[in-house]
Picture (cartoon, rainbow, N blue to C red):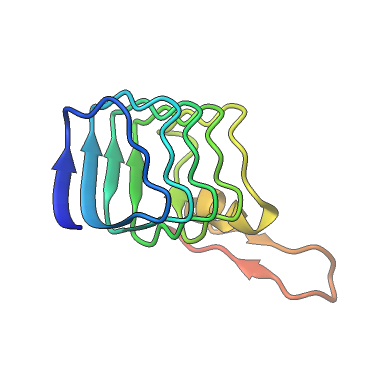
Length: 124
């Protein structure tokens, strides 16, 4: 699907969904499933996605702002950018490889050991 907006949906189940430039605005989509989906350039604004699953999804360019992501699952998800200061992420699940998507705005570097490759974080 290309260029869409969801503002009246109650649940969303989209395993393998391919959504481009879709916005989810002011929705309470608790326990929604976006597993192994491609959600390019879309936005999740002022919504409730508590217990949502983004497991294994590609989220390039997706924006999360003022969104409740408590207990959401982002394991194996890629290329997301979530500002912990403007979203609720308590008890959400992330992989270590996802740290740049959470901490990028701080411009810090994260690495395991001095001899291993560093993950560079840039301002969002």
